[in-house]
Image (cartoon, rainbow, N blue to C red):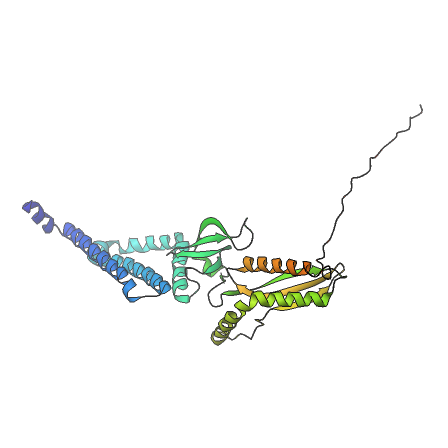
Length: 302
């Protein structure tokens, strides 16, 4: 056994392999300790997640650099070959390289973070992981109406941050403007209808408005953007068939459907309580069966 160990140590190639293995183990232990200590020194979840990803990326770079230093004398004669092969690999893996650049842009450019609701590469969903090559989303929409999960987990290449717009629903301003339209008959009391709608909209939306105003004030300090109408508003137009009220309001980006449901429920209840003074308008189509068609052909005289 002792002779075998001495023979290994005498072989430069075997010695370099042993050094490489020991070095990789040491790097792995140091990285594991660094990741484990994050919870003690970094309390914010998003910062801890990003730091862990950056440490992992640095670990790969250090490991590659370490192996290159250990085996540099063995790789010296292959420099030209590696240069030619590297050019071919770079061309073949350009999408991978762009995805890595996209990861750097996402992490350091504050495009989005885990937990954000975004649209990336034509896919809308909540970010559940940001990898070196792909961002993982819990998908929203598709065959499911409104902002509800479909159950599918989608992985989108990070390169899409350079190819298409990135829509972020929650990063700097976690509220959305939404609208509902309420058609009312011309026979209805439009003043009473407006009064009911304004009362309901303030009852439901005022709880969001206070938070939204503070968030908007913060965003105007960061970006040169004009003041916006945060308070809900009710407007009307006259159409050929009915009076159409439009209710515009602001709501939490995750509660858009729940807010609509609550608004429509209260509107129907309050309109019904007016005793016919305000009624919802609708278009009615009556389909009738076509009358039987009888065709009589005259006898042709010869």
